[in-house]
Image (cartoon, rainbow, N blue to C red; front, side, top):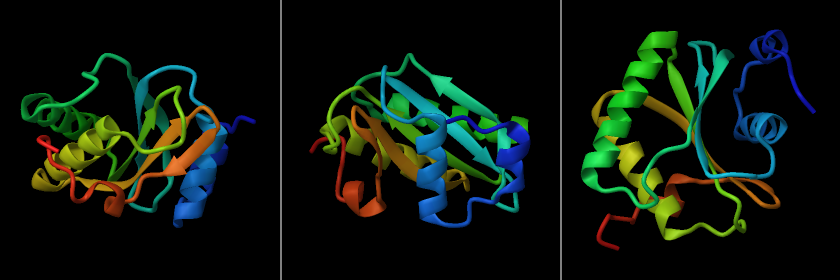
Length: 144
């Protein structure tokens, strides 16, 4: 199922369930390794741009995560977004991997340091979509 930009903009994403449903609708089951950025305005309405990023390291280091957070800031400023949603698409199982935790943690930290609002992080996997909650990656560090 697809959704038009007008339909997406008409329905604010005010709950975690609404976000997960939208990600399932737009990205669904993973077919390749891609990091997606979805943007929300001040009213939690999705802006008409989904940005795929295909070429990023499997496991981040501080430098790649820092550069990625700068990229997110530029993208958000460019489209006038108030919030961003990250979707980590990878064609493996639903379990959370070390690289999932590393990217989620380092990027959340980098965005927070820049005053950016990360509304949600989700994983697109072979069977569908799952939430990636802060508790899932809060204790992670690059060394773990």
